[in-house]
Image (cartoon, rainbow over all chains, first blue to last red; front, top):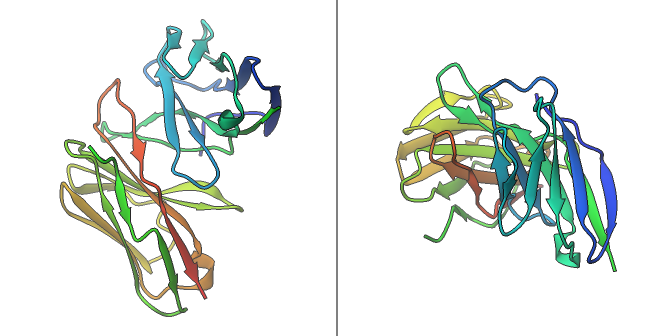
Length: 113
Length: 114
């Protein structure tokens, strides 16, 4: 089962920052938080990930709380093309030492003109 | 690199027929994942491989589903016999197993079983 909970949907005005929250209260100390998005029926697209420090790349910023029980994905200037389903994932480390990605239901973000 | 390549992009088949979906992972990646996506159940992990060995197939719905990875550059997901409820989009993803790595997805195969 997914280890994250997200709001089912959000709206954001074009040009404004989109802040997408995620709760992962059962996260373990060495588990990473990943964000993906899926536009229409395309394959999920990687956005960003982090462990405990805040991260930023050309697509977004990831803010992780100090207790690591929640995080926020920030799209600084949302455009219509950012309309998608956004998935927050806690990457599972299995007993074999390998990693797998379990998707939850995600947040459907609609960017409004 | 061209990314993860899946074929075919679309498949329409009749109930009872065998269906084979194909995936070519990104060169150098050592893990491969098969997912299924439906409106009702979302994105489900079916099976994943590490170094060509199946690690976890607990998501495979029934014995009608099987997956193989004969080498590092090719994997198949087979459904035999297919049923209408198998209609879904099937995604393949690959990654390099490591602390600071991510998985990359293919564009999926849309399967329709009539």
